[in-house]
Length: 292
Ligand SMILES: NC(=O)C1=CN([C@@H]2O[C@H](COP(=O)(O)OP(=O)(O)OC[C@H]3O[C@@H](n4cnc5c(N)ncnc54)[C@H](OP(=O)(O)O)[C@@H]3O)[C@@H](O)[C@H]2O)C=CC1
Ligand SMILES: O=C(O)C1=N[C@H](C(=O)O)C[C@H](O)C1
Image 1 (cartoon, helix red, strand yellow):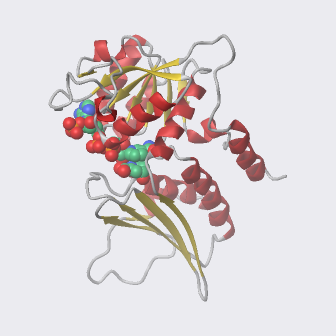
Image 2 (cartoon, protein in one colour):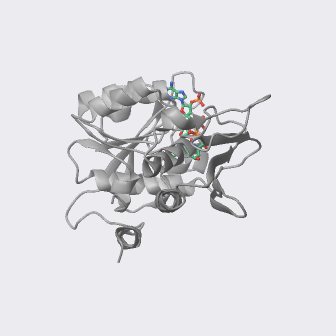
Image 3 (spheres, helix red, strand yellow):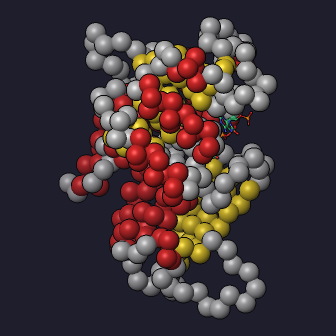
């Protein structure tokens, strides 16, 4: 069995319904961006789970949801109010799940580090300097950070690793992504991660070979580049395709999200994984047993 096959088997074995060991307590989870698209999805997933409990709900001070019950949108009273007060939002939590904006995540990171609260970071659009702050904080607390928490996307990343290695010459590589009209960063964090995985498999540096836009007389395509195309529209949850275009054939590897529930379920798997970690920076390959 290859390492890749073993890694994919591990995903199935780990399962989406891991339970805490007998006698251990439930996971106390706070959610940042509690009234956002992912915030709502996470609160619903926590409520439906039998090993996680909502322990705090944070949102930006200007949010109209401040003061409301965090589960009011479900027609349910959780007893947890949405607050912008970091002390109140984190006071009873073991882990904060953060799907907000880079500046929000960094403010939450500082507060979590001070209080010893672990983090699952799903936010995308960080600068290199902002990523370095997260690396630094992981010296004190355990963090899972990934631009895409879905099992399917992370398995797709492994497929891309393999495809890129096998198609290293003679194939032009393009990453195409589509998202809803409200998304504020581009290319998506997932598209960039796909580019990084491919570049690494090819021994290239994405910073040197990425092409993010083409207009006018661009000249012929440089075969060493990895191109990115971004589509924004409607309510597209998240589509990613990597095209390997050769002479006489094309290979397309595509992942399509039909629901944000997969991101929420992946985030809860990350919460369970963190119960066994004291400090350090991890990603979904670690959570899913896909690290080779
Ligand atoms: N890793 C993954 O699997 C996934 C990652 N994402 C990423 O998660 C992030 C959020 O996505 P989504 O839920 O669609 O976005 P939304 O805009 O729906 O939600 C963001 C939430 O964060 C709040 N917020 C905005 N700015 C700040 C701030 N400075 N401090 C604290 N809170 C803030 C918003 O409040 P308000 O609305 O009042 O501004 C809102 O409640 C994005 O970066 C997205 O790319 C999304 C899906 C999956
Ligand atoms: O903003 C979104 O919606 C999504 N963002 C993430 C990204 O930037 O890759 C993950 C997913 O594609 C949805």
